[in-house]
Length: 240
Ligand SMILES: Nc1ncnc2c1ncn2[C@@H]1O[C@H](COP(=O)(O)OP(=O)(O)OP(=O)(O)O)[C@@H](O)[C@H]1O
Image (tube, rainbow, N blue to C red; front, top):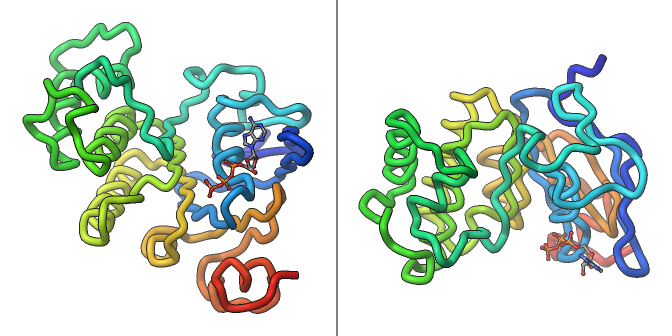
């Protein structure tokens, strides 16, 4: 039996000439900041957990269940992508609704959840508009609303607050933490902002060249001098 919310056991995935290899686990309710240089494999890690990429080897467990062979929809996972992944031809309301039921069989309860989600991200009244008529930050908030409305036990966020500006990013971050607490969800959040990691996370996964270079508590992490790739990433030391 496995009590972790997430566990990756010797998961590998080839990418071009290189590839990734990940093993780690996370407790239920934890919030992990996934950090690392551009191209290190952070999005790949999230995609392997969500099921948008299949491992070449190894297994992915969610809440103790081996989900390696399951499609994304069967995994109890919500993911917010870097490029927010909205359907351009569908209005905002429908984009959020698809997160609740891909067949769009929506009753009064689901409709209320959609309205509440739009209101919580500050997009009340935007329901009939198409993604193309929204700003980048507004589209990002639609993607957040969709993930929040789903209330899945595992929330995977790929730079979800990018481009929102500091005030709105902080607001969306607290909203994410509120919803995490309501659902008891486990969160993995890719971010390039140390302040976001400090505000939200209890642990850090530092990914470098397709490997987990550090899996550590957040407290004191940014001050560590024993991880050369971290000093380089933060711009405060030479690469190894
Ligand atoms: N389908 C693919 N084929 C070949 N290489 C790929 C493919 N997808 C991703 N890669 C490469 O794998 C590496 C890891 O990509 P990934 O998107 O996971 O990085 P990342 O850490 O999320 O980067 P960023 O912070 O820039 O978003 C990159 O070098 C990328 O170019």
